[in-house]
Length: 398
Image 1 (cartoon, rainbow, N blue to C red):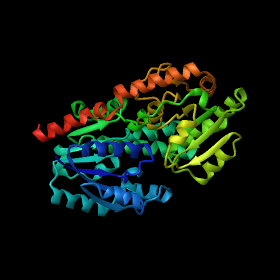
Image 2: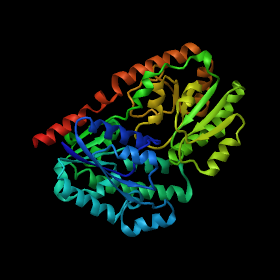
Image 3: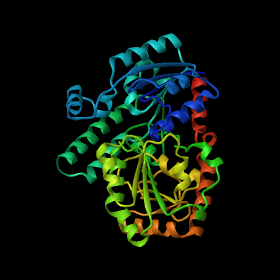
Image 4: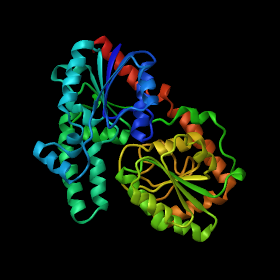
């Protein structure tokens, strides 16, 4: 089948959780189909990106750089659409999509992300698939719950605007995929037809499963935090770790260290990490393997956000024990104490991290169980099977 794959980000190389999912879906579809990428991008492509793009069936891009600031927020109110939609709105992209549909006559339009649903033509709905990285309004709703003052009001208003927009969008597609059963139920509550909504679970980097799990005796008491550091839920979770959790761990394990890595950190955030005794800021890394090989445990203490966490799934696949908040593990088919240690309060998170920094047997058990879970549920040939079924139905005209 011929597919136009419409996405809000150039997916290679995949440094963020959303980009990892986008790239894995694109690669999966390319196994059996002719896939043409139509993408927004934020800047010029590197030579490596150009070489990757040259191997695709076709690539068309539009440069769009709209900042997330007060002026953008005001502009979104003038345009009467949520901020996320306004920041990804481009008349040039609308013309490009229209032209590509006429020129290529695809069998399927795969829309990657709510912000790209605005480019869906009315006559293409039955052959269009929407992939939602998150139930978007829920992210803002949860953010509002932990904010105060003006920031709380802004987040609450944005949640309400996104809820209305998302409710209108989910009624327009013949097939919709969420990343978890929780998100699927949320989209149904917004008005999506239950039979039209499936689940395409997030999956980790498959190559991580092929590497031997770290040996406890070969590692130091290093706690790893690895995520997109421009995303507010990650920033908030990291702040909890820096302000109370890591200092609490150091009181019990003085030799403990914290390594923070990920793309998109502000200078202020990088300086904040560097100012904490025992903490080290790595920033964007091309190859995460040295991070994984040197870590004894990965932590995610977020209290907001949505979807499922690629950082947790990647740690599972690599055999790194995980301590996560309930929200950080939400949507994953995990059993606390079997696949990971789950903790929400600072005190319980500290106790869980201290346990794994000291207990070889517990680390090995969690590592083995988590890797078994990935092999059984979170690999492409299993997690993306519903996508094959949806494509077959579209091909059959049903």
